[in-house]
Image 1 (cartoon, rainbow, N blue to C red):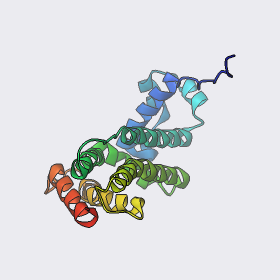
Image 2 (cartoon, rainbow, N blue to C red; image 1 turned 135 degrees about the vertical axis):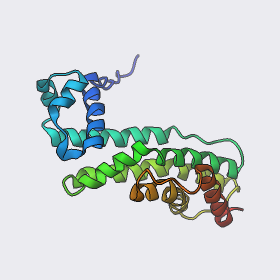
Image 3 (cartoon, rainbow, N blue to C red; image 1 turned 45 degrees about the horizontal axis):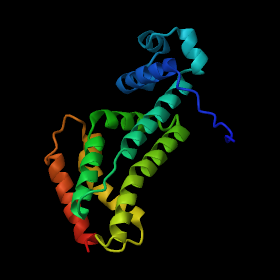
Length: 208
C-alpha cells in the first residue's frame, strides 16, 4: 500500500517574484519614502491592480522585499559546505565565502535600507537580523563542532560564541567599516589578508 500523498507547496508566483525583485532595486536605490508603486508595476511587467492584489500597499511590499532578501541571503550561506582539509583549510574556505558575501556592496545596501527604515518597520528589521544571525552562524557552528569532536580544535564549550568571534573578525573590516564610511572608501587590506589574519587569530585561541 502506498502511504499518504505528501502535498507539495505551490510553486512561487512568477509575477510576485518579479515585483519583489524590481521593488528591492527601487527601495535600495531611492529609499522607502521616494519609492512609488506604479513604476515598480510597470518595470515588473504587471498592472498596478495586479500588484495591489498581491501586496496590500507599499508597506506590505517593503516587508515582503526584506523577508525575501533574508531568505535569499540565507540560501547563499546554507550552500556553504566545508568538509575537506585540515582545520585551517576548512576555516579559510568558510571565511573566504563569508567575507566575500559580506563585502558585496548590494548586501550592504540592503542592510542600510533595513537600518534606515527600522523605526517604521521594527518587526521586519528584527526578523531580518535574527534570521541572518541564525543562518550565517549555523554553517560555521557545524564546522567548529565537527573539528572539535575530531580533535582538530580544542574542545569548544560554546561553539556559538567561537563562531561569533571568527565572524566578527571578518565582519568588522569587510562589512561594518564600509557600511559606516561608505563604499567609496577603499579597504586597506584585501579580503584574503583579512581572512588569513582572522583564521590565524582564531587558531591561536582554539587550535589543538
